[in-house]
Structure formats: structure tokens, C-alpha cells
Amino acid sequence: GLNEELPFSTEHNVDHPISLYAASKKSNELMAHTYSHLYGIATTGLRFFTVYGPWGRPDMALFLFVKAALEGRAIDVFNNGEMLRDFTYIDDIVEGVIRVIDNPAQPDPSWNGKDGRVSTSSAPYKVYNIGNQNPVKLMDFITAIENKLGKTIEKNMLPIQPGDVPATFANVDDLVEDLGYKPATPIQEGIDNFVDWYLDFFKETV
Image (cartoon, rainbow, N blue to C red; front, side, top):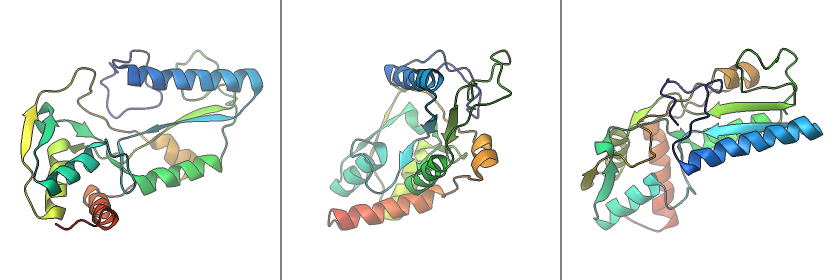
């Protein structure tokens, strides 16, 4: 949303979303906390940062870019490729989810509602970021695809879209402290894995 402090902490105020997508995620966390408070149900909110990898959604950038490159079509590059995204490989996301499942949220005995902490509660509720903590420029992301495919992709350079944010960057300190986990797959390795999967699944050749 309108929070511009980086990296994004789960303790930052997120009460000013700038897209309906962001507002829906905030609403989900609020409803989860309400269930935890009313019924004692342990809930954990997970904020994923730009997930990519094999079996990804076909409407996401990596899927679209690789498909366009193989078909010789141009891609739309918003904010002239200057956007920073904390791309997080799917295997890292899955590992984080498993660790959270194995460690259900507990009430925070030190929480008092007065010190501004928003990621815990007197209810069994917790919020974690799962991100790579290494923002990458969109143009560098595209270059990694080109490196793997061995070809240059034609680009339509466009301004940033309304409701989009110029950068994402996850602070995962509490993930490390509580669960002993820190995502770390390098962007080139993750893209290489995706392209290998894509070529095999769709029986494509470069």
C-alpha cells in the first residue's frame, strides 16, 4: 500500500492499501484474527513475495515472458523495467509453509495492544513474511530469462500501472527467529529450473 519503508516488516502499518487486491489480503488477515480471538482457532497469515517456479500460474510474468520469447513475440515491461520485486522460488515457499504448519500460532503473553505490534496477539494468531530478501529489478529478471534461453526478448517499455508498487522487499527476521528458516534460492537458479520444466512440460525447443 502506501507504506514505503523497506524492507516490509510484518509490524508495519498496512491500513492504507492502494488496490482492491491488497485490500482483500488485509481483510483476510483481519477475519483470521477475529476467528482466533472468538473461537481460539490458531491462525497464521503468510505474506508471499512474488512467487515463481514450475507449475506456476500461466497469467504470471515468468510464464508469459518465456512463452512470448519462444513464440517470438514482444513482452510488456511496466515502469520501464525499474520495478524491484522480491522474487521467491516456489520450493522456498513450500518449505516455509510446512514449517508454519508444524508450528501453530500461540497467544503472545507479552502483547498488550498498546505498543503497535500487529503480527501477534493475545489470541493464537501470527503473521509471517516469506520472501527471498533480495529485490531484483524487473529488467534483471528478464535478462536472467534471456540468459537461459540464449535469445533476446523484444520489449514494449510502458509506465507503471495504477495501483502497482515500485518495490517489494521482505523482512523475514521473525521467520528466522521462530522457525529457523530463510529462503535463499538465487534468481538465475530458479528461472533455469522453471525454463527446464516449461520446455519439458510443453515439449518446446529453444
